[in-house]
Length: 224
Image 1 (cartoon, rainbow, N blue to C red):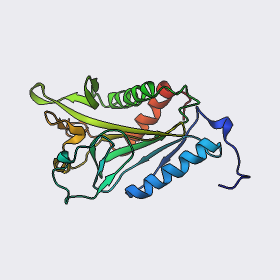
Image 2 (cartoon, rainbow, N blue to C red; image 1 turned 180 degrees about the vertical axis):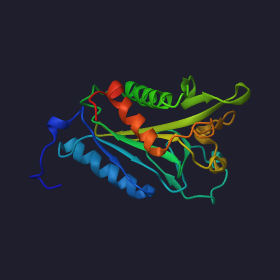
Image 3 (cartoon, rainbow, N blue to C red; image 1 turned 135 degrees about the vertical axis):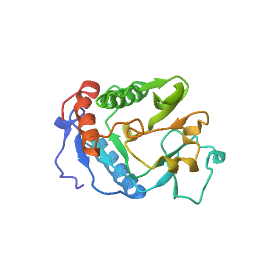
């Protein structure tokens, strides 16, 4: 972005740009795009950004990842990442939402930001009659499945650089759940993973995107 680029101060922090990428976006390409946008947001030359996409099958390792939780290092590519958290899986059928916000302009409260990301996913999942909840001591969003067992339906991992958030959340619409078996997701061994479709609901990815858009304003402010 050139020094003469248009400033977007009037668009932040309450009116982010939304992008939905078709197909599958490579992980390194996504990270590069996010890092460039973080700098532009900090410089005031671009608005905040919510980026919805799907990745090809891959594993990512957060800053707290235990190598012992990578059960099959040859199954899919493994990418170290600067976000918080442990190992997670991304792949087709999973909606990844990368959220780049000027946290400094929004008060700087990282705990509140994480809570808001969780609330956003909970409210979006409620569109499909899914009761999703937080669980103390467990990262992510959880639902009750058969026989009173609980499983994770959504994950989150965030990073903040120069006061701007990036990385974000992932909601399982209809991924191949067997792909999670190459890791211990988020270091939690006693509970499995599930998806919206595995729970018997069959919305499209477009339906999920619309739910996320509709719930944005009630959590973060400013309708899209």
